[in-house]
Image (cartoon, rainbow, N blue to C red; front, side):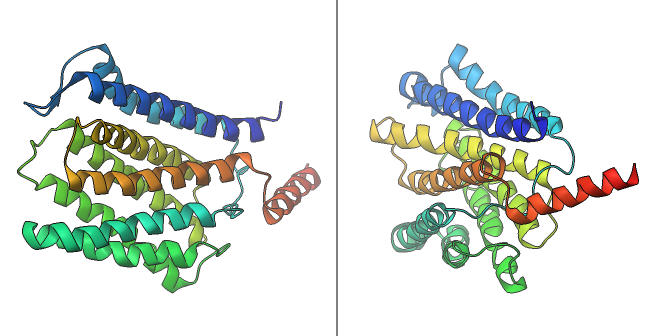
Length: 278
């Protein structure tokens, strides 16, 4: 078995399975163990397992990434069919900014204005870059840091929301999801500026998919079931849903699709060089 191709695919499969498991378990927790009078999840086996999966998932992804032989992953991201997922994130961010600026920001104050305003250029980044391949021009790479800043301001907004308890499971899961989105963007931007960290990026994409979707899906389902009813949290969940799908799709493209031609040629040249040296 070719470990150079099996281990990357295993990384995606582990991320996908753990994300599905985590989202289902946390959804069940909110539907069956959420106490609306206190804002907390009642203790139990599923609640504890849901918490531990936040630690188990990164550990598994790191272990699988370490199985990938060094210098076998491509140095560029496979851009095939990336546009729909990137546009989905752009629409999520644009919808967030529009709704928040119209409905929430005037009443809530200045803190919320930061993510509301940053969501517009962040959406532009995904819209502009949706069909671009390879290394980005400097201006577009710089624009790519706007989603990172958006995540930082969104975490700050949630943190300073005194109407929701500090360690609320909803608030914590949204903050962790935003941080997952942020590290995935940093991993992707390394490719865009020509300084990739392939195995690290694989872990970042997997962690982002897990944290974003295990925050978004349970919250969306619980809101639909009228267990939760916080409209601003719902808007954050919509963005994280698109970000989680985008991250997992990037991981799928990078680890499961055929290698880009330039990466295949580079690896062949490396193999020939090694043979000559021997």
